[in-house]
Image (cartoon, rainbow, N blue to C red; front, top):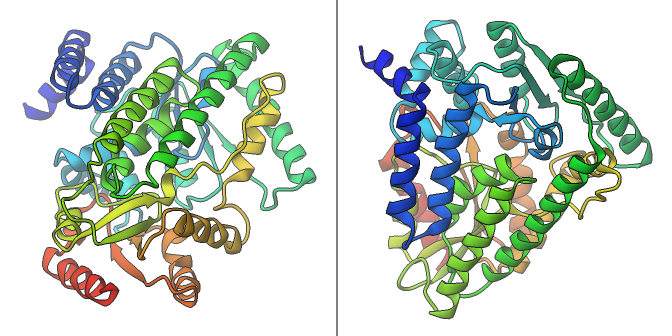
Length: 411
């Protein structure tokens, strides 16, 4: 009965409207940006089930501008998996996926997403778009989901090199993607709409840069834990939309207010840290409380580093290709190391924590090389093994011991 009730509530437009209204009321004073995040979540789920527009599932590293350019409804199951972990239902979803032969070696976010999809908790996609870069498990997960839902999946094959040849190849792919979308939904590339989406994205990018500049202040005015939660969710989901611009403007106001009041994340900031990798554990845990108790705060995280230049609204697909290829996770690991060193200097950190998420080849594979380079530059770095969505792989005692020893070394 409980799963059936939950599915009914998720599909109920009235329930989602009530939840949206409650979110706006609860957070209108404390943090308007967080209220806008909740508004987006409930609205995104409601419209996905109602099929007001064709629903496009996209991967986290597929630019959210793409579905907005083609007037599709974007849905990111990876973001929903983070939310499921936060509210304590990921373990049930992961177990359901494992019972359907999803290996425990796979990324827990995709096991969670698969379990939610198998249980009927996610809106059915009309098509799926993902990219090949950064995330090894994404295209396999999305391929499986296309088989489950009986829809087509377009994999954007991202070249290794960010050069003229690579940009031409990727731009041609995006033109093919436009044809793919048009044939399946009837939504074709419209130059005026595309220009508007990219202009919105560029304006939002500028606000994000201003936010990141504010976060250089001491004491640190904004928590890295929050930044990797709802801020990252909006980064992945809303660039190119009016709501995305409104959210980041509201967040800028929140952080500017804290800077004006000289209000830090913790009472006494002794150590500034850089968090490496795009995620953190999203289930209930004490990692950031432990750090705060030791006088350490995550001042910045590589997940919210702005790596792309403004896009030309007159040439939207070329601009999107350039954005994808500009990601410092593409190509040789030296690109990522260079960006990390830039962040470490900019935010004047005393150390870094590299969260190596179980099942993530991208994070685990390069962590020790990054650690060694950071140490050579005088920046102590802890490689913290863990799991972002599966609480069964979290040990509070072991994690506390490692964090305490690391912070003691900084002193």
